[in-house]
Amino acid sequence: MEKKQAPSPILEDSLQLNDDEPVVAKTKHDSEAKVPELKKSQKPEQPWYKQPKIWGLIAVTTLIVTIGGLGSLAWRNRQLQQDFITDQWKGLTRQSELVVAANDKASYDSMVESTKELLSLTNRISDADTDSQKLPTFLVDASKISSFKSYLVELKKYTNSAKGYTEDIKNVKTSNLQELASMATALKLKLADSKTTLNVTDEFPDGYFKISERLDAIIAAHQNAQDEKQAVIDASKSKEEQAKIDQANAEESVARWIGANKNNDVGEMKRWMTAAYAKEFDFGEITSSYRATNYPVSFRRVSTEKKSDQYEIVHSITYVTKSDYTADTNYTQTYVFLVSQDSTSKKWLVNSRRSSY
Image 1 (cartoon, one colour):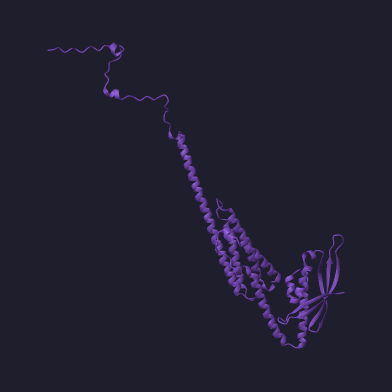
Image 2 (tube, rainbow, N blue to C red):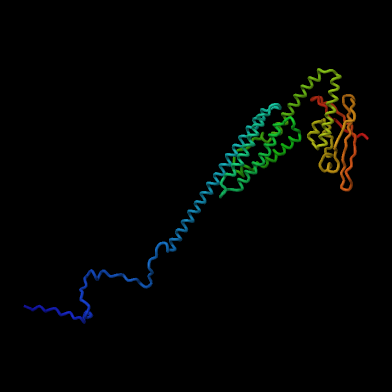
């Protein structure tokens, strides 16, 4: 049998051990559990709050959320604004319809309902203006709310004027109604673009812009009724009594005509003129340019005489002449008026005027 060869002794020199180092056998586990070494070019991993990419992502996300929030807020505020304007406009047009309905039923001695509805419209306009100041102002259409408020100003001005005339219809003059008609025309033109400007569909009724026409018709109807009553009364009186009444009425017509002339009131003048004379008369003498240097200040009746079916009434009128170079001067001009009675209304009206030298 072969002898087993004894294992060669392990020399310290072959293991490269020092004298004081113990010999430890390496296991398979030790050889596999190697600690990884960092390369010189590899940096250690940073915490998230120090990473630029993370902060960039946060910034982008914040920007998107902010823009979305502002967009949502803008949409909300603009929608609130539009809903407010639409609701208020609808309420105003509905109230104006009530005004027209009340005016259609009104009469000279019964204007209470007209005044009441006009007052309600005025209050609604004021409330709309007050409430508009409570609307949000951030990211809204400023021009739209500005237009809405400007419409309210003109509506209130016109409505207040109309209300004043219905409250005191007995003292309404032709010039007042002409002024109201001019305001209505200007207002209607201003509101013509409201559908586009305010994005609304409701409209003010046409009758709302014709209040002056309705009041004029009411006054005319009353006057006609009064004339008819007076005609009945006059028919029952004696000729002598009637002559006194006719003369007084003729003198009053001239006085009213001269007064209207003095006040530059063309409409009132025409009320006391025959239709033929109104066409012939030169109203240029009462223009502001003419009256700047020459105008009447007082008048008095000199005489009245019945001539056929007319009255000849003489008036003395005092004028002032102004000059930039001399003191103001006064002079007196005498006029002869012919006054005739209208066959239909039985009113005595100025039919002509001539100077008396």
